[in-house]
Structure formats: structure tokens, C-alpha cells
Amino acid sequence: MGLYTSVAANILFPLHEKIKKHTTWSVFREMERSQWLKPDQISERQLTRLRCFLTECEIQVPYYKELFKKHGFEPGKISSVADLSKLPLLTKDIIRKEFSGLCSNNLESVRLFSTTGSTGDPLRFNISKTRVSHDVAAKWRATRWWGVDIGDRELVIWSSAIELTRQDRAKQIRDWFFRTRLISSAAMSMNDMDHFIEDIRNYKPKMLFGYPSSMTLIAQRAEKKGIKLDDLGIIVVFCTAERLYPHQRDAMERIFGCPVANGYGGRDAGFIAHECPHGRMHITAEDIIVEIVDELGCPLPPGVPGEVVITHLYSAGFPFIRYKNGDIAVLDDEKCACGRGLPLLKDIHGRTNDILLAADGSIVLAVAIAIVLRDMPGVNGFKVIQESLHDCSLQLVTDNSYDKQGAEIKIRQAFSARLGDNVKLRIEYLDYIAPEASGKYRYVVNKIRDNSFQ
Image 1 (cartoon, one colour):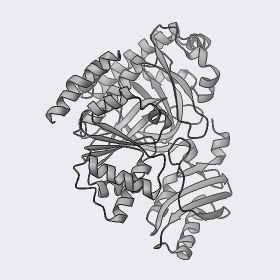
Image 2 (image 1 turned 180 degrees about the vertical axis):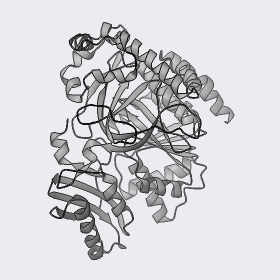
Image 3 (image 1 turned 180 degrees about the horizontal axis):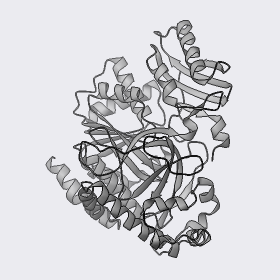
Image 4 (image 1 turned 90 degrees about the vertical axis):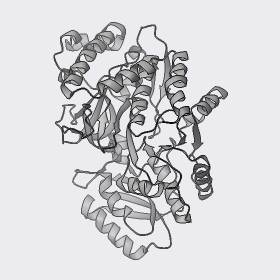
């Protein structure tokens, strides 16, 4: 760690958080210790915190006071985390309908946040300073796993309007002190990407942070133009907000010349999990309980994919208890070679509406299609849109090395094999696939689930 980074991480940032009345520094120091506890010790702490959290919600939050009474649920008497399954799931529709009842009557100040609304329907909720402190501390801890820290040069390639509209003078000064630079990837034309490549080469960041789709496109553009990005001293590329596909990881690691670290979370659910240098996704168990459930809300064992349900243990200001965030994932019951006692996620399959349905109604993971397209010469971008069980369209961005006749035969065979022989596939060729309004790229849009899944 360089001198400036040491000062920024150990003096300037703790002071910055103290001025903001956040407890980030003390939470971070405790997390640095607790990650090395044994799994049963972490579980015991988690249960103690859960009892306290649920008791706070019962006393301070009208919606949960009534819900607990209705279900005969007594927070002080729960004997294990599994007792959470006695409570119903919290959905986005419930949050929209019961917003006022979910607000705590505690006097701690809260701030209104919202998701970016990838499906066109943003979710609004409150977040307290306590929860912000825990989310920031968890991200900070995960950053340090990779040998970088606050104060190291960071280039953030982002396109969320929430961050891009908050670039006031105070934030610009803060970013200057902590050597963080934000560039907007809301537009991704060839000219835009050329400017991004120039920014990366000039700034020489120690770490990159952003959407995997945007950073992969930039890396591939640099490679195509013969511009090196692996000689800048970049230590790690942090990816978040979208599913990280294997072909994206491969491209970024090759072109940037460094490992890629996957992060999983959201403004609503919090900082759920992060990848360590041993390649395992560690859950932030001090703050968050992760359940994987079936369509009836019943918990599933490790190794079985299901819907992600989150309980954030420091969200009493606006509780997220058994919150269904819309993702599909798999728990892992193995241990990581890094020695941390934090529980693991084995795989994150992405949004529930990023999953295709075969003609017989069975689930087909998006990666099954992505694998076919990623290795096809000349394919530089793709998007699958499933209109119905028997109707799909495929948008493709290709170059001169693409063999249209031969490729289309292979593509149609792949779709038929995975979705059914009677599925109609329309192939559309585009110069550019635009991101969603949120700035994210959806490689699969399942309109069946968009219209019916809640």
C-alpha cells in the first residue's frame, strides 16, 4: 500500500464517514475480524442479530407489528434462522402498496432511494445511515481482498442516472481526494468507446469498476484496434449490477491482464456477496441472510437453484425481511480455501426474467444460449427476446468474419434443441444493441415472465 493510499484509507475516509455520521469505520474493523470466525460462530452471531432486528421491527414498524401478530410470530423466541420461513415473502408489489407502514417510527434519519427499474418500474424505499454504513463497510472489505484499497486509482464506468446526476462540487472534491473517477457509459458508440480507452490509458487505474457488459465492449474494442490495456498496472476489474458471463470474464482478464472479481447486490437488497481471489462468492453474513426458495417460498438445500430471498439485518429503518429480489441462485455448502468462515453462493443465474422457458414449460438458463453465441466467429453482441413459448427473436451485431448462412443453421439448431422444435426464431441484424433505460444490458428478455412473474 502506497503512502497516499494508506492515508486515504486509514485517515481521510474514516473522517469523511464520521462527518456524514456513518459508523462505517467501526463496522468495517469488526467485519475484518468476523470474516475469519468459524462458520458455526458466524451462524450464532447471525441468529443473535436476527432476534434483535426482528424485535426492533415489531416495536417500531407498523407493517411488521401487524404481520407478526397475525402469524403468531414472536421474534424473541426464534431458535434458528430457519424460523424465518414462518413469515411470508416480501415482494416489490407489497413494498409499493405498504410503503408508509414499512417506515419505522424510529427517529434515525433515512433517505429515499430507488432501483434503476430495469423492467421500467422502479422500486422506491428508505435506507437509514445505519444500513448505508454496513453496506459501504462490506464493499470496502471485499475491495481489500484483492490487494487494492480506498485511495488507489479507481475508474468507475457507470451509466446509472442516480450516480450520474449527483456529481455536485462536494462529490467531485471527495472523488479527487480518494482518486476515483467516474465516466458515463450511457452511450456506447465506437467513438465513445475510443474515448473510454483513452481515459483508461491516461488515468492508469489500479482498479476498474462497472457493468461487465460495458467493460467487455470497451476491452474488445481496444483489442480490435490493437491498443494494449494490459500494461497499465490494473490489479483487478470489479463487476457488478449484471450477470457476469464466462465469455465476458475471459475477455476482460485477457485484455486488461488482471483477474475479474464478481460482486452481487443491489440498492434494495444490499451488498449480498462478493468473490474472493479463490473464486468463491462469500455472503456478507454479518448483515444479510440469504435463502434460496422454490415457487412456494419454501427453502431449498445447497446445490438446488431457486429464487433469492434476502433478510437485511440492519434495515430496521425500512425492513427488508424475506425480500424476493427477483434473482435465481444456488447456495454452496463447501468451504473456501481462503479460510473465511462466511457462507457461499455457488452460482448466480441472474434475474427471473432472464431465464427462458422451453415449449414444455421447463426452465432454460440464459447461459445455455450464450455459450453457443459467444464462440461463434463474427458475433460481437446479441440479445434474445422471448415473446411466447413458441416465438423468439434474436438480435445480433456481427462483423465481416460472420458466416451468415452457416451461422444461422447452427443458431436455429441450438434454439430448437434447447427450446423445442416448434419454436419460431426471427434473427435481426443490428449495428448496435441499445442498453435498457437503467443503463444495463439485458442479454435475455423473457416477456412471458416480465408480464406474469411477481
